[in-house]
Structures are given as structure tokens and as C-alpha cells.
Amino acid sequence: MRKKYYTYILLIENNSLYCGYTDDVEKRFLAHTSGKGAKYTRANKPVKIVYVKEFDTKSEAMKEEYRIKQLTHKEKLDLINNSCYNL
Image 1 (cartoon, rainbow, N blue to C red):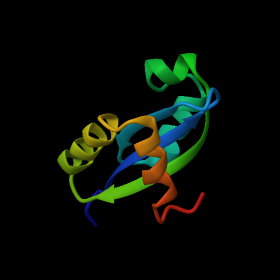
Image 2: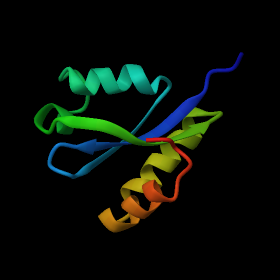
Image 3: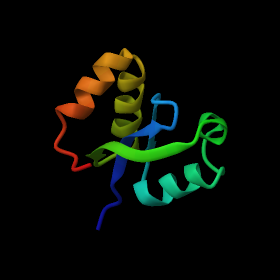
Image 4: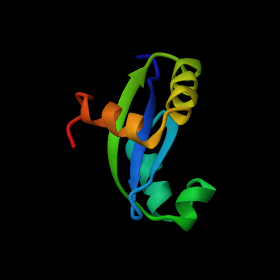
């Protein structure tokens, strides 16, 4: 079975959003919440995963992460609200 990669968005305690990519969303979320994730999530506590999209390659997931990071906050909220991801 081939490894899958994911682009995800986290809701942060201060209502900001954090976007990243990984091959294991739950494990990465636990790393973020335990202070072992990204610098931003060490300083700003993640509340929950609000968006996940699956990809076959790491490159695709990274490209989607980059694309999402270029969006405005409102555009990110629209993406989250229009996704099939079950919150």
C-alpha cells in the first residue's frame, strides 16, 4: 500500500489558522498540541483540525500547502466551509 500525504488546516486558540502537510494527520496534530510541532503552534495553541485533503505524493501536498498559505483568512474559511471534511 502506498503512503498517502495530507495538507491540513488547524484552528488556533486565537481564531487564526495554521496550514501544514504530513503523512499522518493525527500524529502531527498531537505533536502540535504537545509543543513539538511548528514554531507557530508552540506559541499559539491548536484547538482542532478543521480541514484535511489527501494526496498521493508529498510534492502535491506541499504544493497545496503553499497554495493555501497564499489565501486570505476569508478565503481559507471559505475553503474550510466548502470542504467535505467532517469537523
